[in-house]
Image 1 (cartoon, rainbow, N blue to C red):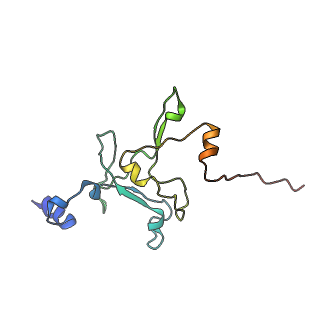
Image 2 (image 1 turned 135 degrees about the vertical axis):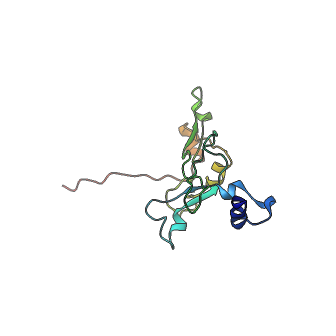
Image 3 (image 1 turned 180 degrees about the vertical axis):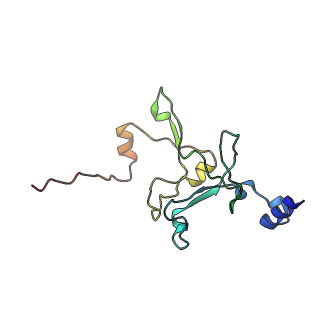
Length: 145
């Protein structure tokens, strides 16, 4: 009875509206900035997460925390390699293409990761050149001696 009261206090009395995904979000907390109230929300990633400790879509919970059902440890990179044709390989990560939290590409894969979807990443240079939206060339510093 006490457990039911706690759940109703957290999720409301209408059990039809309860969602495991809401109770079990995958939390990607930034190590340095997650605790900072003003900027932490820009760095942290959180999305509904199915699964549990004994499923293929693993999600580890920690009781005794403020979010006891939150998924705090899951696969950050999922990869399925097609060794006969690497261009058919599938990949997914929980954040996005960019590590910059102010980039529009910072969270691009968040929803797809939670839904178990994947993307292909081409390895053929012609395909990469054709589909690229730009290039970024990093050059080593020149010796000034």
